[in-house]
Amino acid sequence: MPTHAFDALNDPAALERVPTPAYVLHEGQLRRNGELLAGLAARTGCRVLLAQKAFSNFNLYPVLAPFLAGTEASGLYEARLGHEEMPGGEVHVFCAAYRAQEFDELLGYADHIVFNSPGQLARFGPAARAAGRSVGLRVNPECSTQQGHAIYDPCAPGSRLGTTRAQWDAQMTPELTGLLDGLHFHTLCEQDSDALEVTLKAVEQKFGDVLPRMRWLNLGGGHHITRPGYDLARLERCIRYASERWGVTVYLEPGEACALNAGFLCTRVLDVLKNGETDIAILDMSAACYAPDVLEMPYRPPLLGAGEPGELAHTYRLGGPTCLAGDVIGDYSFAAPLRVGDLLVFGDMAIYTTCKNNTFNGMPLPGIWVMRENGCIERLADFGYEDFKRRLGR
Image (cartoon, rainbow, N blue to C red; front, side, top):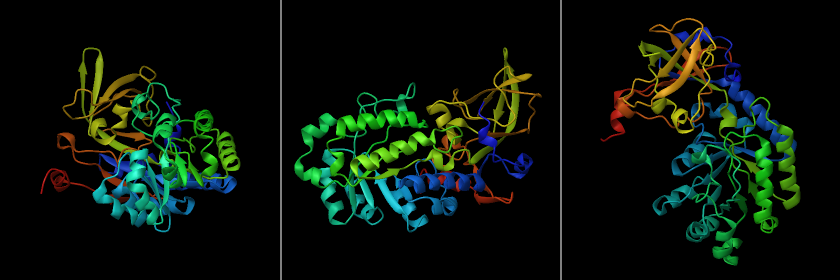
């Protein structure tokens, strides 16, 4: 069980005062992550962006902004959010396909626009260039470094993400190539820099003849830079290699690294029951609604004070209150029996939670709180019936 998810939590008892279910974001850990990323940029000359698809709690952008070059967006709304809430920072946008009716507005927010295919580049690239925006193309090096997470593998066979070399050779005319300022690839998911090193070699093999004509190279996200034990020295070698070999500015757009271990999901036990040999606790949080990656990835999130099944005296299967049979967080063991009303605290819940949650089954969205560096806890947002209803009609 990872323990670093709770390193920033100096006073767990303070969470007892938070109405559940609730996300609690940790200001101090966000700052520490930002400082580490800023150090990387200072040593290597790279530029680091916040991937808002992982963390988009804009109230805390002022904590990260001094350490970052700007934001990365996946479309119009995130681009606008980054433009408005991290003013002065660069706004980079990548989308698998842009909507014609949104593109002019998007040009008003974005500094860099990355296209997914030669077709999209041909359709929208001239307008982006005429507006003075930096234009890029996402490439697919066809180099998978993940095992068992095909849903998050952009290099899986038949992937819709990125231009392969065969597609480049068949469709990229000199005119289209002339529109480009840079190339972008994104192939990692919460991985170490050894995976990047392998991928960078594949990018060089596939697109090494193109890169000297580029001004920048974006290495995408999925870099677990702020995780304890991450091989930072190898990452820095990769960045320097790319910048020196091809004369490019190197960009990184991590999401999880910016907010890793900087948030908690607080929940309470609603019921305890037994089915055969399985002890079960129903919580007031739902994996399906509040932490979808637990089911999509899937993974077992860290839980404060709990152990692996059978490690401690009492093992429970923790599940949510929805009608989805698979709304199960996982099996955990505890030193004492769980009782109705007990507070449980899941870790590393700042990323891919608040930005992905939903109201399936009419589940109320959790409140969002922040734990300041002085230990005070403040409410950032709360939600009610009208928030649920407005997602369904007016």
